[in-house]
Amino acid sequence: MMRSTNEVAQQHDRAALAGARLSTAGTVLTLITLITLLLAPLPLTGCATTQRDDHGNGAQFDVITEQAPDVDAEVKSQVLEPTRATVERWAAIGDSEPFEIRMSVTGSAENERWTRSEPSTTRVFARTATGDVILIEQTDASDGATTRFIPPLLLAPPLLRAGQECTGTSVVQTIRGDAVDNDGGRAQRTVKLASNDRIRTPLGEFNALRFDAVFTMKVPFASMRRETSTWIRPGDGPVAIRSVEKILVMGVVPRNRSETRVRLPATGVTP
Image (cartoon, rainbow, N blue to C red; front, side, top):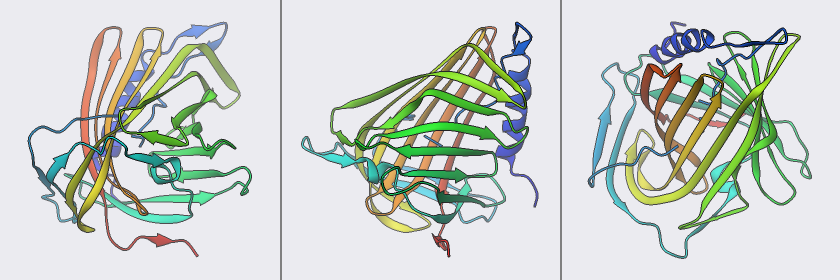
């Protein structure tokens, strides 16, 4: 299958970040494994936004209306990160080829753990006994490097209320083959319930909750910031994601990138 323009762009980013590796006691701090679904806020302006695909992959996204969430609104972590085995078809606006996101459940009812795989990355999540959703690690598909978060990075509390901002902070450890790099990298992610929108996607027209998040990762001489808005239809999970990303190496901006992706019909539970 022909690679999408997004995958090509990600390879360019990895090449730029590879130039910022640091040698410390015979190890190399690899900066090429950064978060990609998860999604930080790209706030919308005005009452309506429309994006349509020109390449025939079926991707379209319209924000018809926006309104602030009810002051007493609250969302469980199962809504933000549902634990389920699925194969979903997604498409990025402006890319020619749809792609699949596969989720498999690997833990037990007492220790929920699941893996989400897409063309560029594979991530391992867990839900704690208290209901927190955490990100354990992420593996880059291009070179097999794994970014591990210590402690696991908090993505969502058991209950996220309107007006509340949830923040998680972790130390970043990069593993490439037998090499383990511990050169002081840190990651932080915040998320909040931002809006209750009426949207139109390939799945139809419906109401969806918009969650805004900011993910940052800093290592010596380099940093990355990703802002993402994720629209979630309660009971159905994420249906649209809009993100913007900036990578700085030695104070230079090698790349700014933005993307809007939407879920396509014909998704379902794996056999």
